[in-house]
Length: 421
Image (cartoon, rainbow, N blue to C red; front, side, top):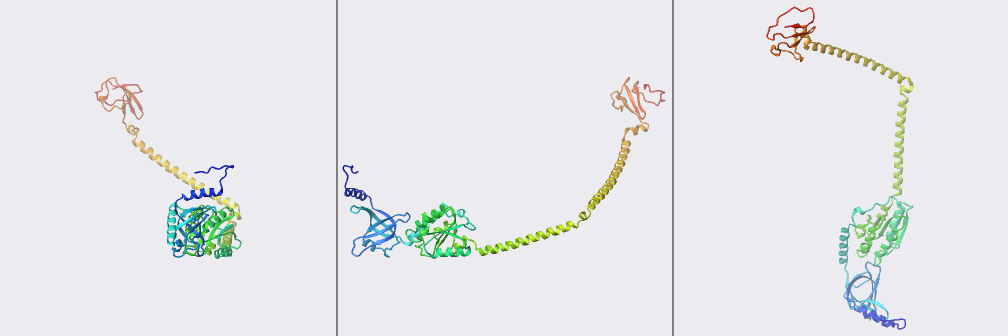
């Protein structure tokens, strides 16, 4: 029920706190998970104060429990442990403070944590966050390397010293963070996001030395993994030793087995590059020298050509070639004409042999009717039909008087007038 207050009728603070306490008391008991940041327990005290941090978000709360609830834990509760609590919220009106009173506390074992990591790994794999197609190639020579590591850690020394040994002028943008404990994942994620916003940073290395499985759990945190997946700058993971495999190794663009291996991967070796340059220079000089020698020999051969010694040499050669071609053409043309003449004569002889004119020359004649059709039988004509008798000397006109009469030889008339038969 809302309190009715006004500037003229304000409510005392204890009334407000009492209302808050009554409202909080209506909340039921819930199970929550957190990571222990501190434990305040004094001999003779009836309650223990335990600071608890959220395992993902950057927030914390204070838990109150009894010594008996903690005494059931084996081994004893320590800072950095993950716990599951059955709590009920309380609002202390005298102090105006919200606390969580835990009636039951359970430790989260390593097996449970690893099982959660494995389930998260399977889920992220299904989403495609570990797909090799998402991996980006590292730049050949980065302008500046972002390095996320612990303060004054061996990992920092291994990466920086070995990388600068390979490339002395390499520049680093350092971010030192907690690399274990309840705040590690959040600090690494924040440092990653800050470095990714630096335009001169071309690659980011996240490095940590060896440690227990529990120590490396922050590098399997889901929020960190998703931040790495969404980062536009190539990421190198160098966590622990070669046998360690936090989820960061799977989402990073390059997985280095150690921080020293990360230094080897992010920059080339300057001595190797110098040797490579020297080798390429030698090969280039040899190639150019060989090319110059070939061109020199070619020029020498061209200079020794008769055409350059005597320019008329080429003209004389071409003139002789033209003369020879003309002679060959004339001979070929004469031969072809002779063959054509001989073939023409042969064709003419054959045509004459098969021509009707040759038959007429032997004294035969051909009779045509008025339609210029050849008459082959007396039955084809009748009395009075006009005919044309073709001989070798020309055509003789005639008129049929008796088609059944047997022709007989007659003397050739003096003129070429029509004759009756």
